[in-house]
Image: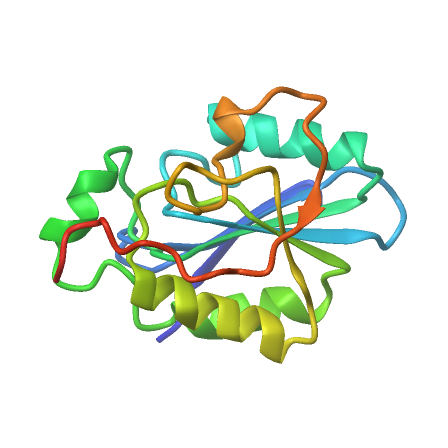
Length: 177
């Protein structure tokens, strides 16, 4: 399948499926260096190559504060939806090309920040953590939810430290599919 790479001024990009249903990656260039961070989140909302949503603005703020020059956002589930509950009603919320794009994004990463919040299913979390470890990276996070999941950046104070996360077994409290 040929995905659509939308880019603006070599500083903003989004890799979206031809049907528009899935966003596999979103990229932002913040500086001229090569320090790259990948954020692994739950699922994409409305952000694309042209516009940022509140989550992406927050991701960019954290990344810039830490001195990264490039940001790539990937998601456990590539289905574009502003409502996480919609994931469990869709036949394929992950997207058939998603893991390939996650692997590719991780190749150039110095750091990976897990930030999918409380709604991910345990089997998908394990699969993505395996991709991260297979790339030779250690997962990081900005704190954990009460269920042991990496917190979403919208709900974290700006001064929260980035810490290594062992990826401990999360509770599977999401819907089953």
